[in-house]
Image 1 (cartoon, helix red, strand yellow):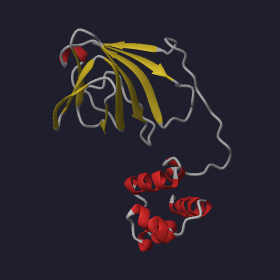
Image 2: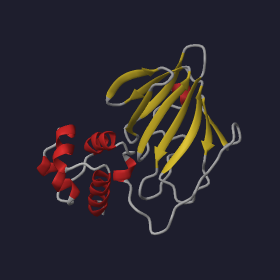
Image 3: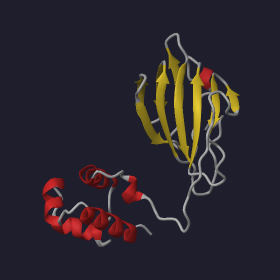
Image 4: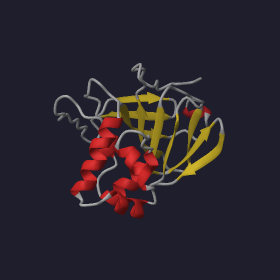
Length: 197
């Protein structure tokens, strides 16, 4: 349960910065009452509010949203360039990144997308969890069931519910290269690479 953590973190950081609730209220646009309720676990801390507070208090937003662990966590995983396990599918190449952790919340890939049509990239796919893409190279068209296709340029990113059928198409002469992350659902079911619905 997160509420006691919110209480400890926000109040502790606010006091360490020498701020009163009134001062934080004026800066954030949140009422003193609302801030007090959040600090006391009587109101839910939304992600948007956490972003506002983290900016004002100059701490990472994860300081408010992460749960404490019973023991210090000091895990890390490194994948050297080109050394990840590679899976080839129709029109796409997936390189698995930083896969050493036994208990995962996310799966990371470097994906090269060569297919120029939905069919060439294996068709529509869907799977549990969320999917995040950050375009590194080329141009990429993202097709989703409930939205018009959108074109990503290098530096663009997208996050969507991956159970919504989706497909990728490389646009232009160059292959599209993306950094992809998938959340791992509570049941531990990993997204399939084929993934067709």
